[in-house]
Length: 213
Image 1 (tube, one colour):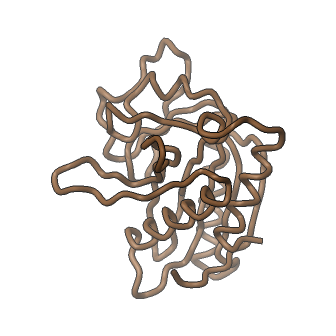
Image 2 (cartoon, rainbow, N blue to C red; image 1 turned 90 degrees about the vertical axis):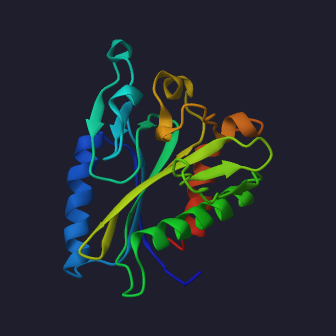
């Protein structure tokens, strides 16, 4: 894995559409070389986001009252809410890299972060003809703990990952997450004994794994 130090930005709870406006601005700055490669860590109020390949039948029942927002990233439907750490990655790729290469790097860096948090994890290769297994799974329980959906424009990445820390997992069951009806979504709080300050520990571990400061 190549060295790739990032500038770290951090916020707490940011409305999804406002975050998209700022992310677009950050991407433009990076395309013009007005800023360095950046990791932005934050959380969102409850929202489902639908990637370009999301099927209509995978959307949640609107009676639950959680909005659904269409987004230009790759991947399928995902959920965001308090207690989840979202990381947006604004990175200029090398001439020898594509977005798939970088997604694999993101998976491996998140595996490293989870290992440091005492949750052994793994990325998975997708068997031919199967739904994409992009993301990170726990080794011991086989549950999915990180969702990833990214895109690139003019050589710069946007969007990123969502790591479930200690939020309510119930809304994941109201839709078909990641295009996989049988997926069992989990969180750090579900996998290990709950502790005070877990989110702060996760933020620090993720920042370290991404060489972000």
